[in-house]
Every structure is written in structure tokens, then in C-alpha cells.
Image 1 (spheres, rainbow, N blue to C red):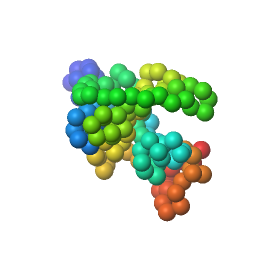
Image 2 (cartoon, rainbow, N blue to C red):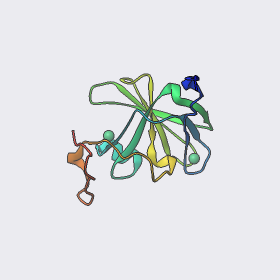
Image 3 (cartoon, rainbow, N blue to C red):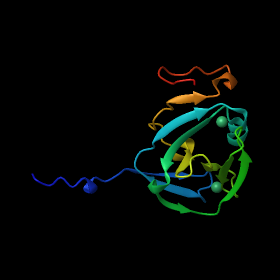
Length: 141
Ligand SMILES: [Zn+2]
Ligand SMILES: [Zn+2]
């Protein structure tokens, strides 16, 4: 047992898909962070009470297929945030931001994996809808 080549370890891959299946993003390995955000922009963008997102390095992208469209908005700090969605079904699949040029942020719901890691934090918790309680261990910075 002298082989110590760690590159033979196979990274897990996951595919995020939009609702109609036209746009797909496949990633290798585990996300570097998982978070939720209850800000008003995220509520509008997702059509839900909060966004639930996983950040991956762009080097984890194995494949992205299908038609897509993007739109940009400014953040509070005046930097751009770009959201990419399927033009057929409108699902918001991933996001990029000027402040994290080497990362891609994926909508966790698009993995349809109920065992996916929980968010480490809920941002803008002051905007949280009153009906849901956070599980223990989720920070509210
Ligand atoms: Zn679609
Ligand atoms: Zn937000």
C-alpha cells in the first residue's frame, strides 16, 4: 500500500436543472458554502420566501447546456449581480457576482436533492416571513 495518489478520488457530481429540463449545470465536488437569503431581491427573484443557494468555484463546472438568459442588477454596494435563467420556463438556475469572480452560486432547489447540506446562515433574517423557524445552527448575521 504505497500508492498515495489522491487524484484517483472521484468527486461527486451533481446536476442542477431548470423546471423544463432545457438548462442544466453539472458540478463536481462539494460546494464551498451554502446559504439562504431572505432579502426582498431574493424573494422576488425566486418567487419564494427566501433563496437557498450553494456556492461553487467555477473550476467545479463540468458542463452547462441549454439556452439561457441573464440579467444584471446592482447590489447595495454598487457592484453587479448577474442572474441566469431558462428562457422557456424562467427558472433561476445560477448567479454570478462581481465581488466573487471565481465562483458560481447555484439555486439549491434545482438539484432536487433533499439531502443537500442545509444553509450555514440566513442573510437578511429581519425580512424573514414569520411562519418559518430556523433549525439550530443556522446563523443569522
Ligand atoms: Zn427551463
Ligand atoms: Zn438576497
